[in-house]
Image 1 (cartoon, chains in turn brown, red):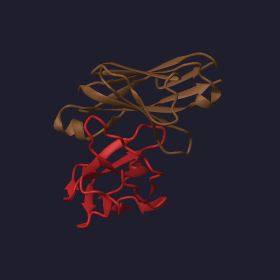
Image 2 (cartoon, rainbow over the protein chains, first blue to last red):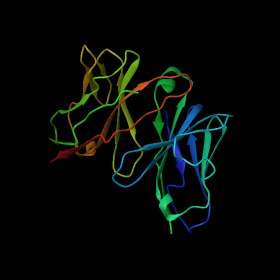
Image 3 (tube, rainbow over the protein chains, first blue to last red):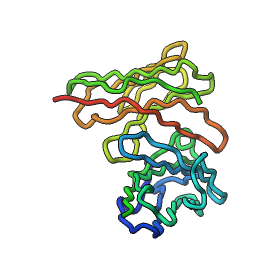
Image 4 (spheres, chains in turn red, cyan):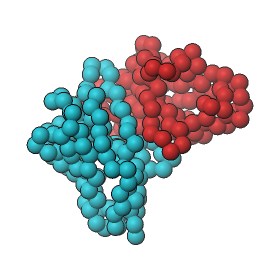
Length: 118
Length: 112
């Protein structure tokens, strides 16, 4: 149980284009989903927290107009990187937490999406 | 959330127990200790968590000192697949918001 998937696993795009990354909880309902970013040889940095049906809460320094987050259902959250630039190239990872007791206490992570902007 | 201190790297022989320490001297009474690991180019994997008591599951054991200022993650019989970065995180479970703040972790290398 507690499986989180991400799609795509890797994507290459041209500078100026937008990229959408999907995060799905496969076997539980995710009341809260989180989006992280990880640059090479660095630790994970939280970008934003999203609750189903409400606006995401962004961490300080993260541009909400550039990183659009939608959490429209209890099993799906999307991150759209708008007008991507080479400095947005990174490893994007989502996590989810749910309603059941163990689900509530623990975040389960997806496998990550590697974005390369040329 | 309280900060944690972990060694930057550790080595362990395959088949031996790997003991990963973590200091969290400023932990509050309602903060849990969580352990995750990240194998290269993958998302973090949940290992175990605890509040006060020692915990054990199929992956590892978590030993928390009585004053809760430090803990040790034990992988009883390390294999090459346990090579990863291990993160010790302390967290308060706020209503609807459960941030995990990742430090630099311990890079554990299991040697054959």
